[in-house]
Length: 381
Ligand code: B12
Image (cartoon, rainbow, N blue to C red):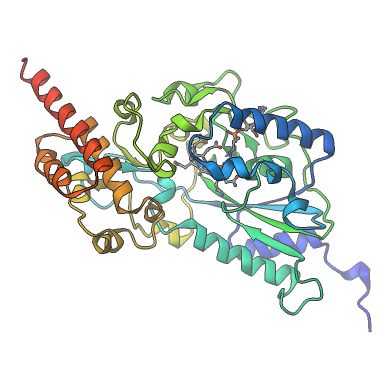
């Protein structure tokens, strides 16, 4: 007997119920952007790339034609399901969650990378949600009814987050939600299913969404950025962003930016830390993020002494820090040592010069010069 359709749960209610079971806090659905909106967004994106703001992130250049075209990624795509997973946890810089960071030369790690790598945790949740909602892809007639992405896909996830109504685009370019601030990850499920949009908006018409806007005339995020990466509201020159420099950029860090990077060794949270909408945010309940891997900070002397990939792996296995590899974290530690370190870093930096490749040696020499300059100033020479 066929079920009476009037007793069937609405697909969005069923999706919401499943999301709740998986502790997925934010859920929204967006339709595909209409051609006018899409053209406008493609123009914005092309000019962003044209300005050189993507730096060496060449994948962003090749993603151009796909950025706002879900149907080019999943043929027949009709709806974009957007989900958000909170990662905020307490533990201020300086108080240290696992070590007393005040008493050592230490480098800061962005909050999103304190615990287990979110890509795996989030993807697993989305795959489970997808299976429960759509059925197992290997057993359904339409095998490509949905596709799951966490960060890895070419779509502009924040655009679809704003368009789905789960939050709005802040002046620092991140999606803000009134309960979670901007301390949450985004994930996407593309589907051929025609779902009704939950709270449709067009982010590029205005920065206002049904879920709010930045406080009028607040520019704290723009002012706090030490490298001037935020050139104005919604205008991020990523090639100057400390997050890009410490995580995505592989080569030498430009000399003029090094002194401005402070003690950040992986990512940066300055634009989020000063945001008034990021205060009084509840801690995440997701264990994978609460169990510290890299934690809020790392001892620079220990990082500079990481001689082998095995030692690096032992320290950072399962953490997002793995992305920069051993040489990347040593390069970043050199810069933090130059900016914040003292005499305790001199020996380890000399060892780095003996041991590492010319690129890392260059950063270590820079750090030594800066430490010596600082000492001379302090000694009144
Ligand atoms: C590349 C990338 C980066 C780059 C570039 C950042 C950026 N803002 O684009 C770098 C390495 C710098 C970076 C840093 C960070 N990232 Co990142 N990053 C991405 C990634 C992979 C692609 C983003 C992208 O396509 N950027 C392209 C440029 C063009 O976007 P844009 O600068 O916002 O420019 C557009 C707007 O300005 C818009 N625009 C123009 N005019 C107007 C006017 C109005 C009114 C509006 C609303 C918009 C608008 O048009 C431009 C072109 O489309 C996404 C995942 C994804 N696939 O979406 C994660 C993502 C954006 N990153 C994320 C995170 C967590 C971070 C960091 C916080 C990590 C850290 N702590 O170090 C920082 C934040 C820095 C910052 N202020 O953005 C999260 C953000 C979650 C959230 N709540 O928003 C994402 C979504 C990953 C995820 N799946 O969770 N990231």
